[in-house]
View (cartoon, rainbow, N blue to C red):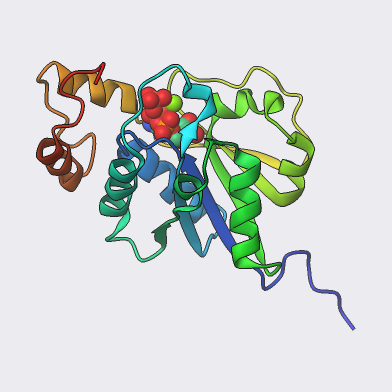
Length: 206
Ligand code: ATP
Ligand code: MG
């Protein structure tokens, strides 16, 4: 009898964690490109609770970030949003995100954690880094201005994927709103409208 190749028949689930303050087209293109390249069945976006890397920064309310993520992904049948991080008390650690998602989907699902190459470069400083690599394959999306310096990542568990250069960041979107500049087409239309409706980012220190 022939052995099935490893992972054969398993569901492939992308996990895209982020602050999403706000979600923008860079996030959406990265998720879409990785989904295509790795033949993922679904990508679940996971807005962070309190991101420990951004402990010194003011971050919008989790419910606003969650709703913006839902609005931005609603039209794509392969995109979904998870509340695991915003419903878990305390700061968000990626290991907890992956454990929760992995438990929710069971052993027949392979996880692909999608992250920007900038974040991937810090990965070795993360908590429980060895377990991280056993739970998920890591995909680093290279984005303009960020290059991987530290190659000390485990072989076979990390891939890099160059995605179309979209020099968009949430920080720039927030700064633009604060100074009255447009963010049309940097974020989905519904996100422009949600930001206006809720008065987000008008003053950056709010
Ligand atoms: P901020 O400017 O506040 O840091 P951000 O734009 O980096 O926000 P995050 O929510 O922090 O957005 O990012 C979530 C994930 O998406 C991270 O892994 C980040 O590296 C990646 N990412 C963000 N912007 C892009 C982009 N333009 N292209 C590809 N990946 C991106
Ligand atoms: Mg960032």
